[in-house]
Image (cartoon, rainbow over the protein chains, first blue to last red):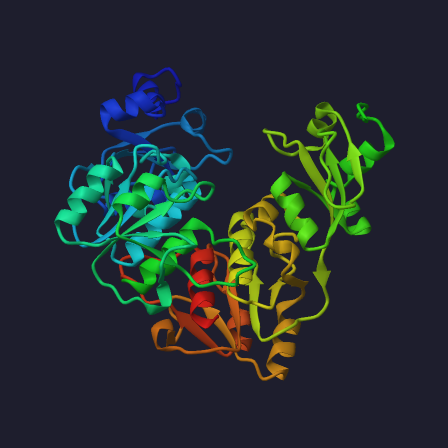
Length: 239
Length: 239
């Protein structure tokens, strides 16, 4: 059991909290047994870090450490007994014909929830614009309940992404309360759906290069829905 | 302009951060101009607290204070220039025939998002179980984007609520991944929908006294959706 916070392995784990090092190594830390198990199932788990001497997960390498060491690595106020090192699972390729694009969506809870919907409703790729939340954001990963490990995730300028998608004959929609299509009247199986940030909505350039807007009919006195609910309703309808 | 944090009005505002005092006074503090305006529109705004000397909202009483005083009242790291005192808008009566019940739902972000959906999709009352998040929780109010001010909100034991609802001939459903009804096949206009906590799902006693469960069809390898997305999809379908 490692009990020194200055042990070289512990130092390495702590550096995996830094953006630059995460990108260099292509790995990041996840906290909680639930996320570790999901990473294991998705085959992206590199190693288990735990203070439980009898905790094993298949033949995944493990590092047993003291609770104090776990605390030194953790970002949470309630430190879990099990953490993991996970491979950053980022793809260069937009796969499939049910696609979700995130246009400057920064709230990690919303993005995690969108990823969870994507997994539930057969979305084949989620494309993050460069100004959307990072792919290894702690809170996003937690909100995704680990579904981020198995969804095909791409980080790409949306101009490039939309060009590629259109060239495949897939229509690009964006969610907007003033969109010209009422969701009730739509029946679609192949699609790309752009979701914007709550504060700013869809970027003008994205509206210009997309095909059509979709509105979810709602009471007029209510301004809008949460972006993850908007995404969830449309993905459910088009699944 | 009040610049002393020990001024009696300022002390009063600060006490409106304490649960006991909030319940005694039936008032609480909201932060941000957006929420203040929503409270004004919903006619629950008692007074404006601001450091902007030329900020007026109709004839609502206002208290002009220094930024330091606002900071002493605020719970946020980025202190807004406009806050308000809002009447706690809690009802004893379950109104209407589209109802949502919260069974031990504690996450404030999820509850706020559910309230926002309720507003958008014509839900007439939202019933909070006693162990759900409080009706004046800061983060819940923010996540609701102020829709909490206009929705009819009730806090009640769910046994009592379900008895009342059933006596009116309204069917009580609960969202559950093993529920016997596939949402795709349902067409309902009057309903009560119970949503449970993400960790624990619907309580056993609620399942016993409710009529039927609803499942949202999804990919089997994905465990579940976020509770606010679950609620949003069902409310959209039944609106």
